[in-house]
Amino acid sequence: MYRLKSLLPASLFLWALWFTGCDNKDELTKSVNIYVVGYESNVAKLWINGVAQNLTAGTYNAVANSVYVSGKDVYVAGYEYNAQDYPVAKLWKNGIAQNLTDETSWGFANSVFVFGKDVYVAGQENAIAKLWKNGVAQNLSDGTYWMEANSVFVSAGDVYVTGDGMLWKNGKALNLSDGTSWLFPNSVFVSGKDVYLAGWDIVGQNGRIAKVWKNGVIQNLTAGTYNAVAVATSIYISDGNVYIVGYENNKEKIQVAKVWKNGVAQNLTDGTRRAEANSVFVFNDDVYIAGYENNTRYCSVAKVWKNGKAQNLTDGTRWARATSVFITK
Image: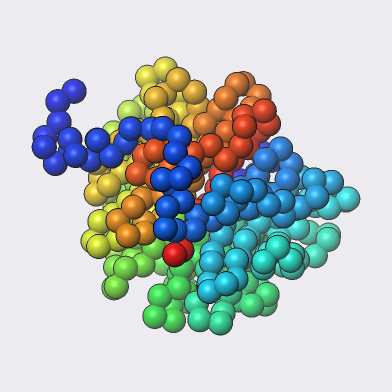
């Protein structure tokens, strides 16, 4: 969610070969449709197989945070500022916008999930974490503290929402601490009876450590050295494999886009320019990741990776990010 604000064992060697980083649009879009959302400059964007569509006119700052495709319908959650400089939470269906919050409050839509005929959006209005079901809002927090909902997932009729150190199941808050550690989750995924969260915790004075939470058990993805920064942003489970993406600072304090498969990390970028991996989706054993890499100090390139091979979605002349990816046949 965004604000305009050495030697390897044989099994790991094959995993490393998977990441060879090059541009190949034909390979990326072969036999599938790739939906990516994000923004370029101040315009919320949807890319379908690399072709950009503007969701907003560019009059005001806007961001698309999440995409979900159900049948022939494409749903996008995000926000757009209005003339009074308030961000308005929005849901686009096939490019047509619906406001989820009014013009006088602060609203953000961060995640969208479709289950049957119901459309769920997680986000925030003013200081309150919110869940909208078919446009009708439910408060997840009481406004005592500033809270936001970052991710929503529906499984077997149960609705899971994460945000700001919380997991809500059907509106009831669950504890994310195991007694020795805590998790600030960015993403939730449910596989069978297992509930997974990806996020981070504070380490040292200014550091963050990337973590994964499964049914109450927390595992560190990074070492958590003092003042290091690492964050897990998105999680996807496929055939028992756990894929997590995010970023970690290298020794030069440059942010490197990363993917972890079952806890084993690989870099998506070479560490010479700041980068993030923001969303992961697995389809037919292929792993798709949306994110960005800086081009210059003031510009960045929105990217999508398939099995580690990168396609640029923007030309690098503006500030751009890809925030979410969804794959269909």
